[in-house]
Figure: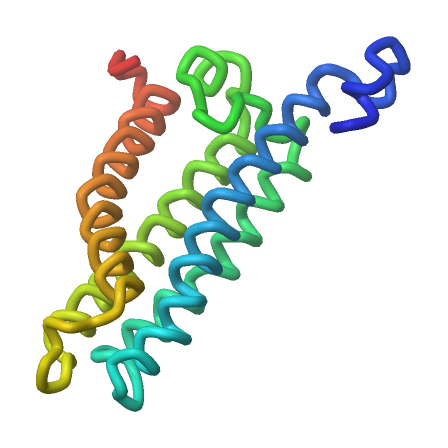
Length: 181
């Protein structure tokens, strides 16, 4: 990406490939690094330590949300290999995602984002229940990090279903000729 920006006339990447690289970079960074690693990874590591408990409230839900993520990442990477890749931008802007990229690559990316959202929703439920129920005596004197994870989990629980609904409407626009966007 930087080489193409540094030398605009070099034609290192054609425009379709450049859009696919920028889109995949943004989606992978947001949904497969920032949310799972910075929220899920550090949350699973530090919340039990700060609450002085052995594990999270629901360890199997925690494991399920972890193991859904590699499959979702695999689908996202496959969406970039199939056909020309997803080049609709990190916002999956509807005119680009409905008309320009009509193949299976956009469908794989949408399915991948659905699975990443399911993983984040289950992790958020686990974080909220753990911080709420597993506090020790004097638990109202928690450090800032568990409270921030609880607030972030609440925000994720309210926004990720809306994102999933928008992605589902986009999927129905693509396959069933609805006209949401």
